[in-house]
Amino acid sequence: MSAQIDRTGIKIGMWLFLYSEIILFGGLFVLYAAYLHRYPEFFAEGGKELNRIIGTVNTVVLLISSFTVAASITAIQRNNKKQTVGLLLFSIFCGVIFLVNKYFEWGAKIHHDIYPNSETLVSGEPGLNIFFGLYYVITGLHGLHVIIGMILLSVSLVFVLQDKVNAERFSMLDNSGLYWHLVDLIWIFVFPLFYLVL
Image (cartoon, rainbow, N blue to C red; front, side, top):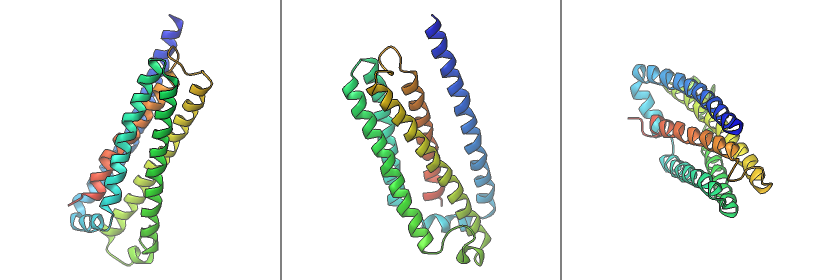
């Protein structure tokens, strides 16, 4: 009974934390909407500068990783340690793919002098400067959350290997999965806002 109460308390704490993350990104999305209303043509122009193929690949990668994280929780509940380990490793690998893609995408933009306070943006239209400012802040913050999610999944993986996470005690993995799903959900909003803006 006590263990059940502990699990419930941990779960509620995690949901409250996730709610604060939603508020953070929600505020940034509202800011984006306000500037989109003011500079629609420049936001559309900025969106055309982004690589939609990389954005689409990253979306697919995160969606697949969300499935494999959920599957790893089901696997541990069924006491299938080997499958849990494999699914977690694959999910972490998906996170690596996402970050590598983002690294190359950012690198290409920086190489073309498109980054906050660059000569190209400062001397250009303010709408474009704001678009790319928001792009770097929001995608950078999201990338940081991907890294944190990968750390949580890695810790869960170690705990599975050490049998600290098992069919009876899997709160750590469950909460890490919730965090990872939030990271994926945020990207589902980020992708169309920046890559598909019209």
